[in-house]
Length: 338
Image (cartoon, rainbow, N blue to C red):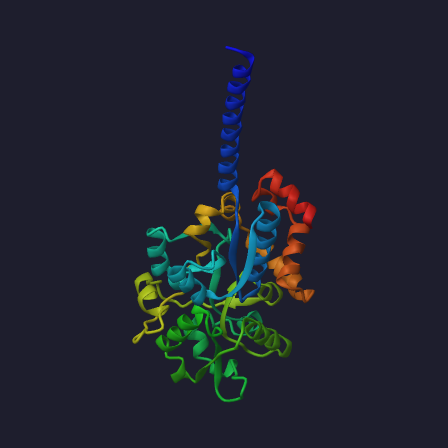
């Protein structure tokens, strides 16, 4: 074989090997590339902060193109189940839509990722601790409903029980339990606070004025860190079937007394995100925080009148929990972007 043929064969072999390496490289990039995704920025403080944490981490650590879109429990869950968008709901309180979500995950259309709060979430009806201390006989919902004089309506007519803003599934559950416990006959009227800020503001106002207050709230939150509150017992066993088929449903015709379900709070992602986000999914399945950290962050956010984006940067700059959620390369990229 002459030299020219040897050179030609060597060139062909080299080209084949180079193309092979290029193909492997492209395949690796395709497997780890995150691409363009949408993340729901839910309309309460902890979920808003988590959405911005996800945006910073996914964009700077994993090269995703992240668009934050407005969200709330029912509209976001419904859109994810029916349209496959947004790609990520960072903090979805799933009890409200568990049956439908379980079906969607069983079919592989959606996936549960991390349980957001490592201590779980907490929901129910609360009264100020100073009301509980002054009236130690009030331990249950029935006890409180039998004292309408302690919980004045803001319009000065009867007693008030504060429900959730429209669009939050807890409004359905609170309204149904309000009926089941016969609260209207005992002199109570439901008050829609209009927003999450309105709900927390009502608690702050009651504390500032030393007045009675009764209504729905949840933890972890800055408010329950600042203002001691007593969660009332519903004093009946939790009936999960009743909760799923009636208590939490809009068309519940004959609601029965029930205890509030233990709150399950997950990050939920679409199948497209799981399949295409690559290492971005590895981060999402690890992202969880204890309630104590969430409470501290939300208190900082409120005290500093900060945005969700501000709180995210405060967390990433001053806390180390997130170091365990990402690999070393992503950590270095994120820290350089802070």
